[in-house]
Image (cartoon, rainbow, N blue to C red; front, side, top):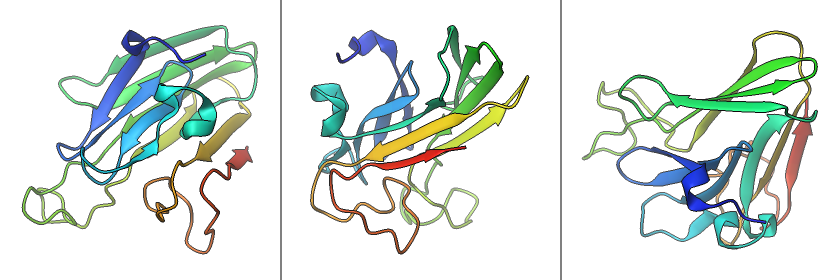
Length: 159
């Protein structure tokens, strides 16, 4: 079942935006612009419509979310029986003229950035990415070069 819209948080770079669910899933992202086709569209139905899940592998007993200051950097903290893990989600800000560089004239990777850190104990994490359409969205869904998976093919990792 798709969560209600008020259950999502927004991350973005002024060119596009992603919606992040309380379960750690990016369920909506049009890339590289707002009017581009959706890479992740689970918001419109089922996870098979495309999503990028990053969350603990164990059952979560509590989830806390907050933005850092006046930014769109999102911290989501999951509590499990064995510890806590915080997932940090953001999209790097880009220069409005040269979209390959940030405002400090440094090269930038525009896709969503996701980092997980264990705060209390070592946690097993699960990550699952599935994009929605035939165009090559390797940069958008975070695949490594050489991993050219077909659209709709899930890329999963546990660590």
